[in-house]
Length: 394
Image (cartoon, rainbow, N blue to C red):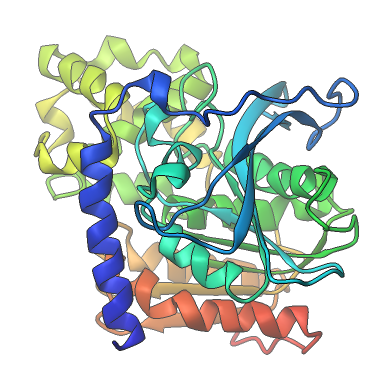
């Protein structure tokens, strides 16, 4: 079977499995094994709080030659406060004894409920991007997958809050390197990878690396489908199929900045939709056909208010140059994340001196582009791990 055909089949199958998993209760979302206390109290970003054996299955029951741990680890909120985030560390069992590269992987939108977290789906084979992650472990790379702030841990998920996501991605790498039994070394080479929400998170991790986690030996970042400007993305989706994502993003921003007071802007329909989104995963939210316009769920548009605009702009990418090369890719026909915003991000990073390998994907949609770039983006990271110089297209 051709690789792209296989991946399309795989992701469609994953989506169906994910929809079935919505019926599972929150109590079944975590790994079954008891957690192990850390050797010492977690006091710094990336420190392990708990760890427990888990399993990684791209499809239900599909065996893999990997060993996996569910972890909770210290990270930092968008406002600089300490928090605890969950995630998964996956290491190939391929006989390799020396250090291996580590990918800190940021998944795309899964939903707001804890049972939607990647770590909840890996043991059951219902995490949508597990097939793409398997392509990385088959190369012999270890992978750390963050659940992000508030997804799988107490508190609401800060969906689309860029700084929080970037911290979680970098601290997942730190945690993986500190986790006993992985075979990873403190100086193991690190790659950052993500698409859609994960592309935003990967972009933020790339921008924060030099100030927040400079000890990590990051070799490069592969980021695709990046929502680099949330206000532009909201305007693009108002009245379109992705309108529900605007409300999800508003819930996430309100979680990080409660003074925004989202509830005061909602009508009865909006309050019902918020309650629904907080309890379901993105597959159910999409199928539900929630609404098409912001005005359908609000008494006034919060995104037109100065405080909301200020907060949303604080998640803009392009204000700081990543200190390592970036492969940036985006479908020219992306129906959810505007192509123009990604092109402007490329220009901003180039102007600041970052080496950017820009890959516009002609006629590519949001879903097809992640499949089209799964292997080329990984090949690009492999070249960075091999020490080959990155060629920019600025």
